[in-house]
Image (tube, rainbow, N blue to C red; front, side, top):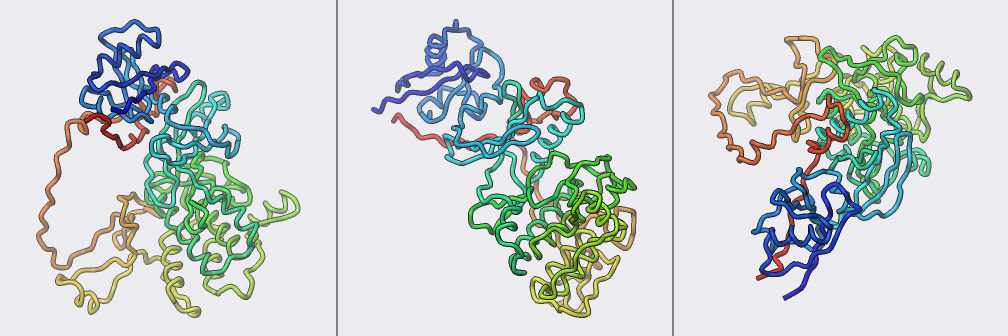
Length: 469
C-alpha cells in the first residue's frame, strides 16, 4: 500500500499548514483531529475540512484524495476563496500596470498555466476605481466567447484582489504589428473577423469595451492565429437607448471624435466601432491612422477625420469599410452588423466593384424560390445569423421599428404559415443547483466580506485517483 501525505492549510491562512499521512482506514474525523493537533488547534465538533474547490470532504472521499491537491481545515466557517491560491505555483511576473501586477502561475492539479492579476486595494483611491474593478469582475464572469479572455476565479488575498484568468502566451497584437508591419489581407481577414465577432458579441450583450487597442488584443498561443480581447477595466454597459455612463477613459490614438470634442462621451457601440477601425487600419498598413508630432495635432486629425489613405495595393473594399467606420457623426457610423456582413462578403470571394450595401437593412431575406428548396414551410430566412453559442441582448440603434429587429441574436425566423411548436421538456435542476443561487457582489460595503463567498468562482473539475483498494 502506497503511503501518501496530504497538505492541510488553515482555511484563509495560507502561512499555516501541515502534512498529514493518510491511512487506508482513516475517516474525516481522524483527519480533522490530526490536522488540528499539528496546527496547534483544539478540535471542536464544528470543524470541517474542504478541498480546493470549496466542497466539504466526506468519509466517502477519503480513499480518493489526491496528494497534489491541498485541503483546508475550517473552524466552522465556510470555505474562503483566497485559500484557492494554495493550488498555484508561481512561474514568473508578466507585467505591471496602474492597478497592480500580472503574474504567471501553474495549477498544481490541472497543470494549466494561468495569469493572475493582483489589484491592490491601496490603488483604489476613489469610489470609481472600486466600481471599475468590480465591474471588470462581473463582466468577465458573464462573458463567454472564444475570442474574449476567460475569468477562471476571483478572490481577495490580504490587501489585494486576485483575478485568475486564462493565460495568453502568444503576446500582444501591438508587438506583432510592430515586428511585421502591414499584414497580408488574408491574415487581416482572419484576425479582424475574430475581433469583430468578439466585439459584436459584447455589443449584443450590452457591453462596451471602451479601450479597444492593439495592446488589449493578445494571441492565445505561439501559433499566432487565435486572438483574445482583454482588459475590460473601463468597460461600460449601455442602456436601451444605446447610451450609457459617461467617461473620458480610453487611449487617445483610438478615441472617437465625439469623445475628444466632449459632444458625447457616453458609452455607446459607436465608440468601439471607431477603435475597431483604427485596429483594422493598423493591420493593413502597419501604422495607426490618426497620428501627429504633438498631442494637439493628433487631436485635430481625429476631429477632422484626417488620415493617410490606404495604399493602392490594398483592395478597394477595405477603403469602403474604413470610410464608413471613420464617420465623424456616430449616427452615420456603420454598426457591427454591417461590418460583419461586409467582412464575410469579401472574405469569401465577393466582387471588388459596385459595392452596394443597404443603409438600413439589418435583416436580409433569401428569395422565396430558394427558401422553398430547403424548407417545407414558407418562411423568411435571416441571412445574418448571430454567433450560435450565445443568448444575446440588443445592440446598436435600438429605437422601435416594426420593419427590423432590435437584436439580431434574438431574431427568430418569421413563419408565413406558422406551425404548431411543442415546447421542449425542461430538465429539473438538482437540489444542489437550486441551492446555489449566487448573490451579487455589487453593492456590498466590505470588499473582503463581499468575496468570502464569491459568486465569481468556477469550481475546478474534480479529478481524483483511488489510492486505496
